[in-house]
Length: 264
Image 1 (cartoon, rainbow, N blue to C red):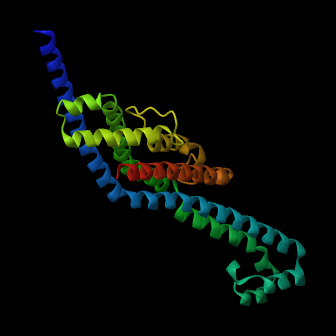
Image 2 (image 1 turned 90 degrees about the horizontal axis):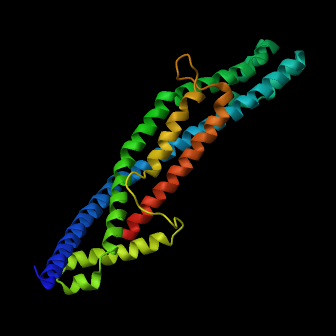
């Protein structure tokens, strides 16, 4: 085979590879668009549910602390002062003013009632099964999106490595050239964004990684007896950990949406 023939064959091979890579990229972009349309809102709702868990625990902690202080104070004053304290207590404490006729004994249990109410709310809303269900659902919804985005960025990086002007002269498909131009714009802007220095590679799953790390830590927050009850000493820590997870997941979802806009 002569040199000219070999070069022609090589160029033809590159053109075919270029065209096929562009076709694959276009399919991946369509899939990403479809997945974002179907799952974006659900992911937002799930993040809101994670935040709700944190807010609920914070409120329970605050309410329990307030009730504890109120119960301790009323128990210490005794007699007439205790009855007066009951009469002036806010309706929101969940105790009818009619109970003042019972006397100080009823007042002494105010703190206990508040703690019981908080305990019931916690059991109803925050338990391990509910948390793990949220983690699994979010992971299921976001995994395909992140895999797809990873493939898209890798494909775009590959297209940018081709000699576009030469392939254009060699008869590369118009759609393939459009994909190459989009790739240059997206990857160029992406590399200059706040994720500067990022090199696309398979297996990098930000949200999945966050969820897996969180799942490994769950054991330390719940009791060993049944694994469902949140340890009293860990309420504040768990609330902060869930809040951090929600914030990080929101950052990653914002990134997915930012890339979606860049692809449009």
